[in-house]
Length: 463
Image (cartoon, rainbow, N blue to C red):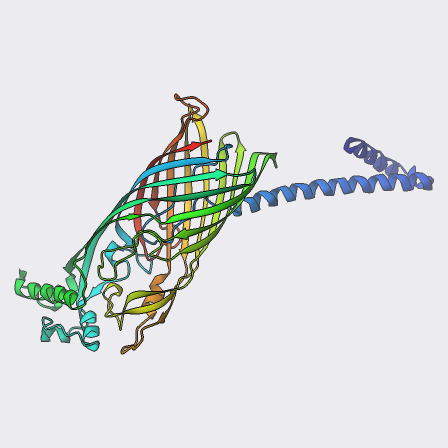
């Protein structure tokens, strides 16, 4: 039909040009109709191409991963997320190790990990302690003439653990899944006087160290911790990981839009907070999950197999946590958040959490070996706070809590994948093995988040 209309339209154009049509009204009407039909077919073909392009574009931006991302500024709690197999169900396990010594502060500058929320100022802390009735007798009178007494904080955190995940399909378009695991964390902080404090307080005079002043300052700092019921800054914890449960609805098309396959999915899930929370009396502690807040998330996912074993796609996630009344350590004025001089209940309304991650992967490039590269951008909006103490005697300065509750993390992930079914193992049900490295980067604006590296070794069994 298309070939006939194209030939007829060409003939119509020739007839019009030589003037034959003009001498025959009936023929003129027929030729004009054929010409209009041909023009309509051309427009339909053009619209079809545009629609195909739009569908591919939107499919790349409607995305979801196989698992949710836990809202955590310290730890990249997300899995490698291999390209989906044609087999609808899978089970996997992996072992991982994480380490961080640095962080991005509120301005995106690289700092020591314990300084993620700012410097430790002994003068500001002592001023707030006096106002709430906690007098430190070891804070000497000459130091009251200082404007600040800044201490440097260094330290690191190390986490090892195991993740397991399982997804089972129940029909062509619907599946259920869960994910959890175990974690072991150690964290520490070390303190040293800043160069500015050393000069202004006379710790270093004429190139000689006045150890008496240095020792007195250290005693004042540790005594402030005792008065505030704050433990020494070393922390060790074994914990379950948060439990994630989700339902997934998906649709796939084979050999569509010049691609080998296209899959689009919607995932709805919840997070049960089982992981250890941060200890308000230990500055070295960190949350090992969502810090005790349950969560609900929705994800959109796509995966395009452009040609055999060549994949690209992207996921997006939006996560929400309901408000909750928790016991917090809160600042009175300008003291460091972890040393807040006011302890009491506050209602916390967590900000929305958003993540997006495009990827490109190649499987079975050579004898079962393949690879994947992924970029992940995570954004957490500001929390809001409400004082829930029964008889507040002091007014909490919620501004730093609000400003520092928002954070941004960016990661580039590189993975090596080995498909046992296509390699030396052979067989229909051989697992896939993978080694993945998650590397924190600062491409846009990483801020108020730890610069944590993660190394993962695991397997995935599809059936």
